[in-house]
Length: 235
Image 1 (tube, rainbow, N blue to C red):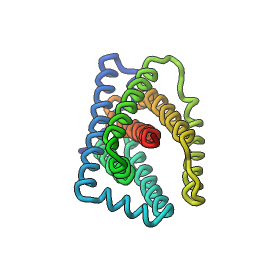
Image 2: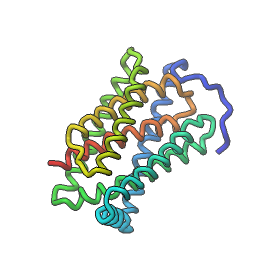
Image 3: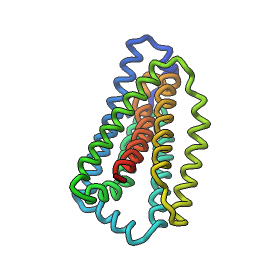
Image 4: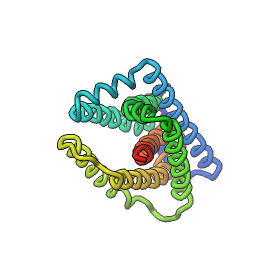
């Protein structure tokens, strides 16, 4: 795909039909990212990679988990950078599938643990996915209809993310558990990110940058799913 040379006029300045078309394409590509995640995850389970990852983490301890998280952070940063190359559709599609693969890898050992924790593993994952989907839909609707400027959420997301990373690293290094309160706080942080990003893509993205917009939302959606699943798996 060639780079697009087009005006960077935000879609909010376009007519209603154009805005609706843009949003439909955004959520179609978000669904594509979710489908790619499921496909990659299926491959990882079928080939036994998910089990191998889980066993590796169970035997090597926290430092290996930090290395995986570090690798995921690097891939996410590269994907995010590529997603914001709004004139390059190839980079945006590459970012979408790279993020889906990275999420599948990071989820694999956790999902393996949940699926093998008892007869209710599949129900736990399905319930967490349903709650995540409903929460995402509700937050997206709020972001679209509200007239309030949500840009003040950006500093909260920045510092909240830094604090969360610090706590995760400390918990891994020093062996203490991050309990349900932390998971609830992270679900709240993911929700705030969905609110901010949904409004931001409408106000900042041009109508042809729907793939990059989907990538921006995908990371927050998966973070919400991770921590809701973590809460469900504690029961």
